[in-house]
Length: 531
Image (tube, rainbow, N blue to C red; front, side, top):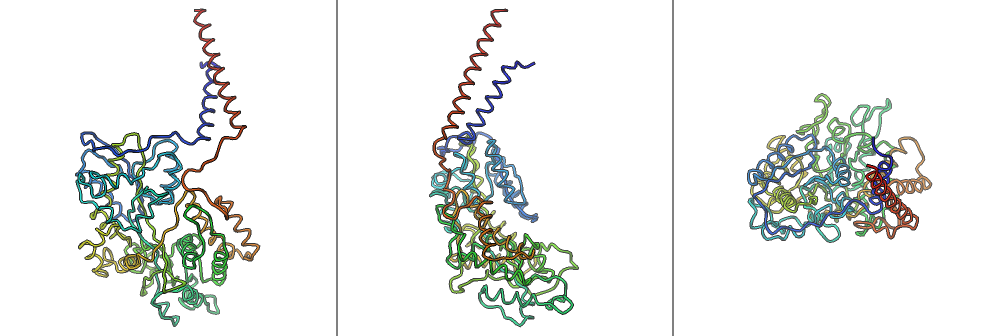
């Protein structure tokens, strides 16, 4: 049976550790330093967390990339763990940071990386690795033909810069596109313009929402019609603000989203929700399913979602008997100023987590670079409407041949998918990214939540007025811990010195710990004398 004294000591020890970790964060680890050479005589085992949807082709590309890499580096074993949602990866990484069991290589978003970086030396800064002559980008000792730094698209690479240092490399990039039932647009008496505008989208959507006397919709004669569905309402808000030159956030994390333009956007969303012309993915369902069933006119989703769009799409997700044959068009998202289009650049990046063994980190970096090789970049880009992140891959003969064959079949060369990719290729200079800081993930979530809440309220027949907006702003600020006048600081937040009460408590616990140890030592000595 355990002695009472030891039980108390153990309990107080745990309490002290808990308090210390709560005040000072997780245990620190040394910053990574690039080794002079890679020790190929040793075996390494690294974990790679990646995301794919229901597209089995993506899984096969990951597996093939790992197999090809391991042929080049037989002493490096790569263990693949697949997720279907970036949010799940984020949550698991956060959990594993506290236990020191992060993966080695991870597909993620820069917003998420900024949160990972609140731990000391958790994510590896890549600047030193980029520039290393032997193992850096285009390095002399690489066993494969990887890109040089200047061959990574600069706009994509800059998104991976946090606080002046690179903490990731881009893996794939996409933007958003508007997938349109052109047949319906023309049936309503409209002609698609060269560039979509918000006024055009709202006008056509209102026309498509008109009903017959029996309650069915004039456009499709059915009981269901949601003319305009937006998949990602955070992107919707962010892009509408950007296009109008309104505030979202500063580079240093000051929150600017609670402004008059945001309110105007929300009133517009409320107006068209009330008429039945507008809804969102979270409220109504996946836009592609409504589009393909003839129950939607405009579906805005990622260009990476192109393989689900259209009655001939390779990844149609509804029953065949529910499909409606229609002419589909894919265009850039609607604009306020067609002469100066603005659209978001988005897509997964790759980060590397720090480990005690620098050689293990270097092995992870070698694999990360391999994911940027033409073989992997082009193969993955062909699965959906993604674009390779290197000019080396984009300008290659193989990729250019792929783009030129749009419409040859409804699988690899599915026309809608290649058109969606071409939108980003044609508008690279019209894309933008949002500032990345610790808290930018929460701000992005809040941007979408504002629209979602307004749409839900209108559907519940609640009054959306100035009082409602004031209350909504307050609730969202509280929910996501935002402040209109300033947001979370970049990187690790300095909480200042410990409060006096906390210092006193820690001092008392330390004193108690010393006294207990003394007591145990004296007791032990007494027992030995009795023996």
